[in-house]
Length: 461
Ligand code: ADP
Image 1 (cartoon, rainbow, N blue to C red):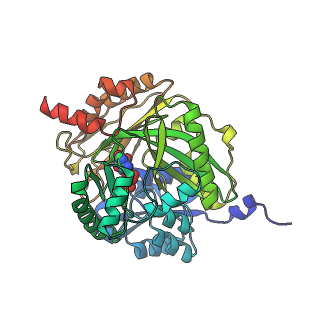
Image 2: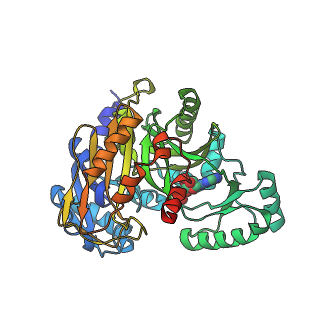
């Protein structure tokens, strides 16, 4: 008798190396244990004392503190996987999570990469090919060509005129809010092209650029998907991540406020369709800008996202477990009809940074108090005595709440923030507390520029 997918999945792997650090390393380790899998934690020299080292089945130091020599060192990670007997690698987010070369090396080493196929990562990693694939699948995109900008200045000028100013120039290989430049009018076009090309070449190793309409007051709304290897895909509702500073998300919520089901439904279905069309596997996020009742695709993240907990709390689906099960080859155990999103959830990113200047703050956490209670979740790796190192991202914890309504979830977050105390280093908690007192934010539906404007007004006051 031929094997069922469940039978063939059973032996795919029993030990997962978590190629990441911080709160997400803790989150993935927990999901693995709940699935009965063994875990391998890795660290750099700066992270030798991390608490998730002692709770993993194996713990290996793979290199010096600088990320380039440890968490980004593909050979060292593969060697650690071999030494510890791991059958799969979970890349988390950031670091190597969207690196097609790494995913390929993992598979070539005979291990499972817990993520989509190498070709999906490569298509979506280039924003131009991603846009082309999405247009082909019927996903609505920002007006502008799905091809790279040529070098010829006259053609570039013509494209900008066709789109209509303001336009935005973006690096095809860009990420993390970098490699983008807004051009309000024609006489600033060529300088913007030159600067962005140079930045793109230096930062992303490719001078490929594209141009699209700059939307002036959009919201950032995204759709979470989960797919298996057997032609099944579902979307788990939507999130609003418009609260951004320097294109970096600060607060996220699910669902996005004020979006009628009949507006979002076709977009969710188009995302599912796109996944089936490109043979997508595992979890992913379609990011959209939303303006005047219309959605415009900007990019797809082919990995677990920082803000996945708000969708976990509203949908009741453990996204990390679902991702690992998909990589094991299991059939997705839910259909679109099973997905119901309930209540409202917020996530605050607690960063080790000055609440006024936003400069990173390293040092020892001398005192820590974390909130608890119904509808409160804290994802973190820190504890009193923990040393926040200057080498990595400043995210030290995520505070997540869930309540029946948006207003109740806001009240719960205010309470949770009031009960969070971190001493010894600076954090953005005072800034988050003030933001959750803001009237316009409480009303909902603020756009992606709101937070920057709010900060400017606060500074001027
Ligand atoms: P990255 O990969 O660097 O995160 P994205 O393409 O996701 O880049 O864009 C990041 C942010 O930049 C968006 O959330 C939005 O705030 C802004 N942005 C990107 N494209 C546009 C656009 N066409 N119009 C207006 N704002 C944009």
